[in-house]
Image 1 (spheres, rainbow, N blue to C red):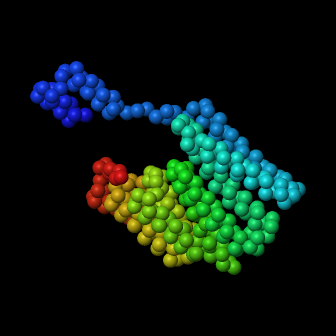
Image 2 (image 1 turned 90 degrees about the vertical axis):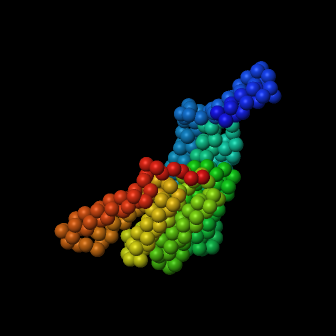
Image 3 (image 1 turned 30 degrees about the vertical axis):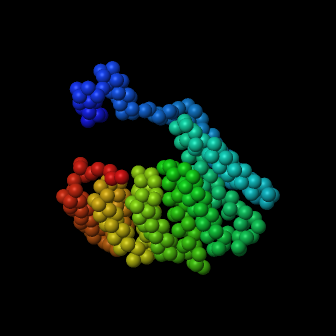
Length: 320
């Protein structure tokens, strides 16, 4: 704005603009540069609160119906019990996500996030009731995971917002669980590999600019990439323990490269929990556990100091 003001002053001095025209130009530029308050932004309104209450009541109603009346319901009624709320969530979300009102848009996001869960439940009920692909056995559960992830991906494509990213991350983790369930005996190593692959691929796409918004995609998919191997390590896969440390180190390095404090926060949390689990599993003596924890804490502090040395957090800036 300062440069434009100087240009207008020069043009007026050169006789290219009269004073009245110059003042109108200055007023126009000032109004164009002023931030436009978005309609409905700010604190949640009573309308938004009622929307969320309605979504919660819908979810609780479905859960109550399934928990206390499931055995007495016919097959078509069981399908309708989750299918009808799914349709309502999809339609109401579609009506709200394109609204000019921010509160309605956020309500639509919440409705679609619920729709992802209801979609997975609906497919599961259909497979179970009609014994498709062995019901909810290994193949059927995998089909439920693929369907849930596909719906979450579709809704994110239609409206790439924070809650849709969260739903997509949850669906990816659920899909990893169904992949781990594919063998005859549940394979936590397979779960860990799948979650690491999904989370790592999503992080790569996020940093390439294909997955937005980054503010939510970074923590969600970093958590997916780390949580899967962590579960595998807790359940006896030694290799997964090392993978968690390596993945956390890679995400920590990414935090320096991309100037993102979110990454280093996720990495430190993951290393903390993995260190505690690792020490408890591999140090049995009462002296060994606290000593190992003290050393681990010292290593964490040293790692943070090194990162601060490389790029001080106070000067972190978010890159586009």
